[in-house]
Image (tube, rainbow, N blue to C red; front, side, top):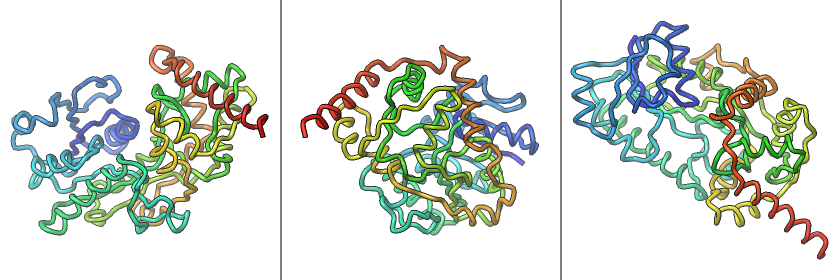
Length: 341
């Protein structure tokens, strides 16, 4: 079977490509700028073109058709509208990566299903994902465009450690603070529930939807089964590093108020997503993906990630002195407030 992926080298998509090629025998083609072609396995076809140049894409594709087209880098409606123009009549299934952050915040229940309402007043990223879903499902209803919606939550790979409060350069500065024995900020009281999913496990659920007629016109959330509190997530990271965790809890509202003005976007990332207690009910997915389960629990996955991060300093250890200083100021200001009361 033949798949075309728009993107194909990111955290989620790279694991899917490896599974398709190495385990399932698919014929895979990627459309991207070719900047991370070193992560793709041998045998993957590469089309290096700007996906927004529709004429160039059509020339590159010729009369090729596909069993599945997967969109991994579509963030705004204009991008999925472009895909609809390019691939209607050319694919038997179009799978769009949306986001679990599209679910209503806060939802009526912390147990989320695909039927949970979509609404996120706190994060434009999520509202754009909702708009993309609405356009695609509209085309499915109007003309049978064969769309499948996938909503991941927090998926990670060997190159990144999943955290909630970090700076623009990712998780490294928080890891560096742990290694230095400095306090690290955890939003809220650290007790809210969260799912973290290793990309290899995610790929099992995604590939089970590919070419599956029962997935057409449907939405599926894909997460692992493991549910942890944020304190447990941070403690597991510290344990893997072999250092004590010095947790400093700060309310999400306070972090949003003092972080957004520095471009940290905590209103969306926290109040619109990670600060909300969630538990995903994946029974709908498992009816089509009976092999979907957590094979890489977090205490294993985080060691895989930390081994890679610590052994690839140029790639993964980008310092963030501004975020480091911001954390120190936040902690100092709250300690001073405690003394003043």
